[in-house]
Length: 201
Image (cartoon, rainbow, N blue to C red; front, side, top):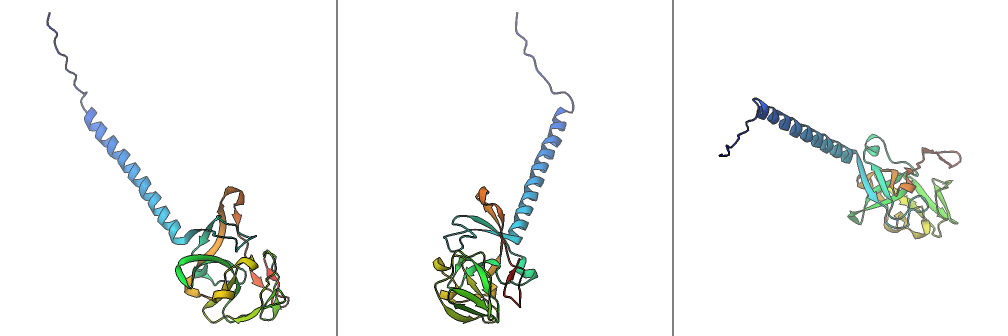
């Protein structure tokens, strides 16, 4: 008895149904990737991420912490006293630094007897590691900012290499996102009390 080969034929319409399903799947994947790309580009347009290198901002920020930076902060306003900012290093714009603003354009910054004065007012600085052991007087030119590290005795800053051009300021440091145990917003001042010199939070 001979074996008769059996042929199977797809049901009518099966192949035509499979094609739309595959096209629909590819379309969904493409749309998802496109949305993800748009979100990625949008986030990168308004924020930057940097790694803290060194101890110059201790105790506020620590070595190897990852920081979220708001690029739009100073498109809508101006840097203020005690803002923590990220900027391109004036002597090597390929490098990015993070420091705290102590003087804005037109200010006179004085360090006398380990204390910092801005326009003659002693400023309250609860964020520093220890008082600075350096003294001096600096006048901040228009379009530039005077910055210091919070770890005053272990920081390369405006005392050494001068002020930061406005156009070199990348943005305002807003959030520590790594490591998880250090998550949190970075505190900034709202204003300097003109009568007392206190930094208002």
